[in-house]
Amino acid sequence: MKALSISPQELYRFAISLGYKHVLEAEKDGLFVLNSQGGTYRQLIFPINRFDPNFEEMLDISLSKLAKNLDIQIEHLITLLSESNDDILSVRYFSESAELDTLQLDEAIDALNATKQLILSAACSLDHPQLYYPKLSRNKVDSFFSKVRLRHTQHGSFVIRVSNPLQSQPHATYLKQSSSSDALFGRESFERVEDATSEIVDHLQKNNLETLYLRQKKMSKPIISYNFLNALVEMQHVHLDPLLQDTNFMHGIEMPDKTPFELSIQWSDIIPKPAKNTNQPIRLLPSYHDGLLRMRDYFPNGNPSERGEFNGTVEHLEGKANITGEREGEVQLKLKVGKRNLLVRAVLNPTFYKRAYEAHGTKGAKVKVAGVLRAGKRLRLLDDITKFELE
Amino acid sequence: MSLTIQNIESELSYAYLHAVASRAGINCQFLNRHSDNSGVDAQLTYQNDPSPTSTYIEEAIIQIQLKATQKTPYETSTHFSYSFHGITQYNDLRKPRGSGSIKILVVMFLENDPKEWLNCTQNELLLKKASYWVSLVGAPATKNGSATTIYVPKNQLLTPDSLLQISQDTINKVPLIYQNPKP
Image 1 (cartoon, rainbow over the protein chains, first blue to last red):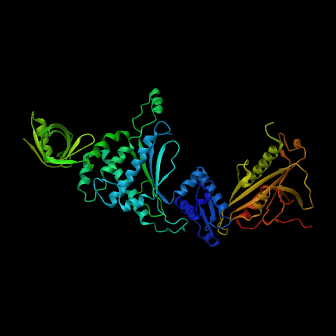
Image 2 (image 1 turned 45 degrees about the horizontal axis):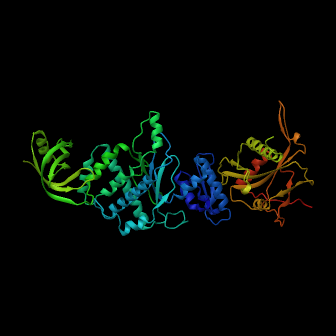
Image 3 (image 1 turned 120 degrees about the horizontal axis):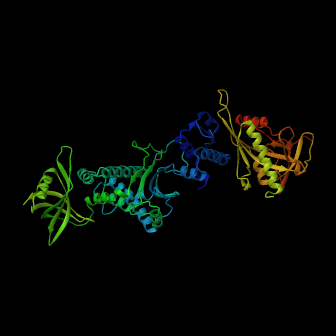
């Protein structure tokens, strides 16, 4: 990346975002003059017009000063500047105990595909909200996604960085230009990724797995889909280098099977940043994996489902008390489906849960249930339950 | 000896500049001396104390190309002559710079005998002989292929005061123009 690819307006905006103050008086001389409060170098001076004969040299001096003040290499600064017109979504795989320099190629490819699925799911949930997308594609979604770019990774951890360009015209003046509709839709899609992931992690931490699905199901415009959850599950399939695991094992350091990762978004200020701009990455720990799988499997997944009435027994109760003190939530049933006895999950309201509790506590008790039996990757799910009775 | 004579000349010219800049309270940073493509060997940064009457420029950058020679220069009553090698760098030094920065040449004239270059005693560190500065902005173009003669004013000794003056002139946009000696 060459310094000359940086426009005066990009450097201006970047410096302002760092707290530099603009000296208006200098504009009459065709100069941007920006002052900082601290740092080794206090002042950046460069022409407003990139075709000024001194632009290259003055830009070079300013970049050198800024890099020194930020204590980074100038090449890194140039990369940061080139990204200032984009929203950047980062998925960072890391290890607490070692620098992560490589990933298995297969897993890296899966992680990239999962990132794609994550962004497309979020975009689809804006364009045509539903709980499952047989195909993650629509004109508006495809148009925005065609502009998303993969960026450089960073040393010490493995980072997938994708950017959504917000500025449609290169070298625009420092007044904020209006962005294209693709760019704005892209901004909303990235916001959706952050909001949906935060909500999922919140439910995982509180162990409210079924609640997430029930809430989304009630919404006329759900924001989370099977596809989105599946993308997060796929992202968790990245494993630590076996050599690193062996080395740490020899030193008595236990390593998790999967690699934790964190998702973060760096918002460009070329359009006003989201109100909820927290700058905090969202961590997905290896311990979330089982919960994520279960959460995902609540959602419809496009596999054939079967509506009917089934007989069976209550095998396991996993419900919790709600705010009124009544118990509700997930139970495991063994249902006779055709000639087979299948283990099935079901999420019950307080009335049905009470009956399930009674059945579970009575030896040999049987239940009759009516609902939609959905195929699942592990346990099947009984959804849309309309009847739950003791026989 | 791990340094050649030319390396030692070069290092002493850096040492001279660094000592004078430090005494003047000016930050001195050496750049990558072994790739001469940019023609900048050192960069000084001077920060002005802002006052209500001063210009909006508060920080001057003085980029310096350093040269050193042990040859006795030709001289007039007012100037030393110096054979500048590198026409590309000469032409670059002739160009005026943007606001807040200047690029100058500093030439160190050393004694003929290397033993005389530097002496240390309990009382002093003596570095001989002296460095002079010159701005080549406005210097005449040349048709030469590899070298051209320039004239370094004898009254432009590199001292803490002269560095401070160059810095102030840069901040106040006072042009520092090359002048050939009068015949």
